[in-house]
Image (tube, rainbow, N blue to C red; front, side, top):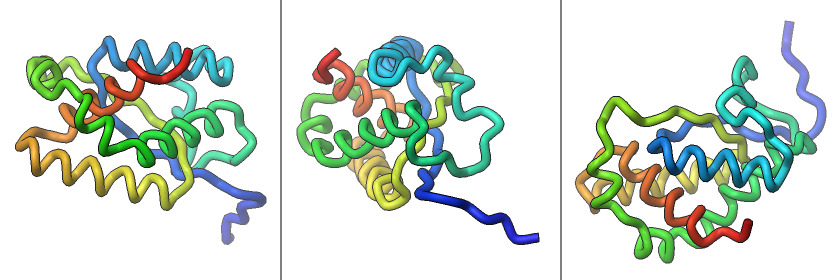
Length: 137
């Protein structure tokens, strides 16, 4: 049986963050959309989330802002601090965003990974950390 989706859908994808950046992101999502448990918000969902879901809309907006401001965030990112995070202490968090925005963000993350000669966990933490430091509460 073919699965029918009704209405616009966001793509759900994962990023790895240090504990402090994860906590800042959770606070941001709580303030933006009332998301109480970011770690479990998209847990058990398929690879998509419906547009109109408050948490999905909030993370979609966040991703769009990160994509738009990526160059400035890259310049502001503290890659050295992110490099110092123990490899096994990153938190995987799932976000939802418009599929083309997810693709664009992944491309930018991979480019930063190559330029900085670090892994994606470090890039995710440094870039999203920079965003959350400048994002309005």
